[in-house]
Image 1 (cartoon, helix red, strand yellow):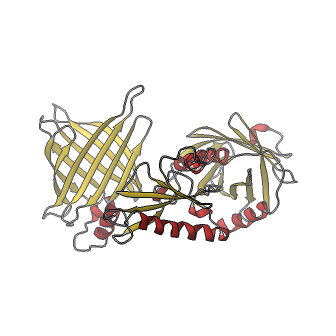
Image 2: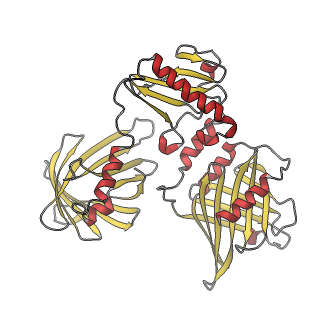
Image 3: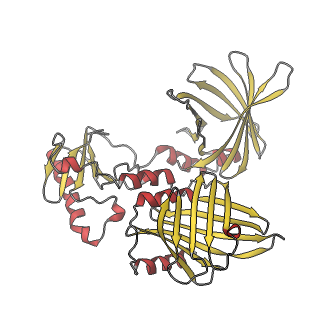
Length: 446
């Protein structure tokens, strides 16, 4: 699929068509398509799958079933942003010719694509009514009844973020690129307070939020969003940035004691300012190259002596998020590989009020019985009490009684490798258990 759509992509950019001008921010709204959408009507069922493959590219496919649940040949899809234009591509039956559509306008949330050549469809309209509803309209000579060209999709699965691009981050990035560079006023001399050096190619600034005793930024005078945007023509500039960093290390007295140079590129590296800049860090020991929690998890997973089935499934970061609350569970081994530590964080959001944060931590130690763990719980309210946990290969049940003699249990049920259903129960006066809360958590990148 990717190869065919990529070929089509290069055909598109080789044939510039004059049309309405759009921004990457306009395209970024389409990131919300990521996931699986299902439409059902009297003729059967249609499913669209979309994934973000780059800041300027989404790829998708359509699968269909008729009323008798017989599969009908579908389509491969693509959405592309290039040179201030947005294209929609559909390849019928995964093998036929491509229909290409150019975005002609955005009207009250309707993304209107038109085919300016002869094709099966002359017009395709996508409308994201909400995060869970998608409307799609097709116009073609063979569609006499508009109802047959109308699809109301419901989101049936959320995309797994692990290994995928984060649409919220891409939206922030697209918006930032429509605004002035965060370094422009320093480059232009309007704000000279943290300026250390400038020549025709670069500007060197003190960091406004230093992470080390010496923390400098080497910034190109001409804006380049990320290192991914560099070309062969930028070789001299990139080399000059490195040599300037070396010279600044000498001037600030950290060249011999040691320093670190870092380009942060996109989300996993923590890039928040989308104007390429080289960090110069020194004046103290810089610490590990990677997140030590990630490294500890990898070491534990590779340790056949200590790793247990439950740990193999649970290690990592799990998140549940909705309008009102975000719950994060981080499971990681301790440095001595004797315990697995649970860090719990709940952020409650109330309209017109600040967020309420609740945090807790527990260190689980495996007992002599297989799948049996003991731990002590500590939380931000000052409560401390013991936990008993058992894992049966499918679920883990954690039982507890707090200092107020309230008795409860938490059940972790593994729906698949990336999803956990977490149910909190409280024991009633009559000895029965009542569900207090239920969450579905998705595994995230560390």
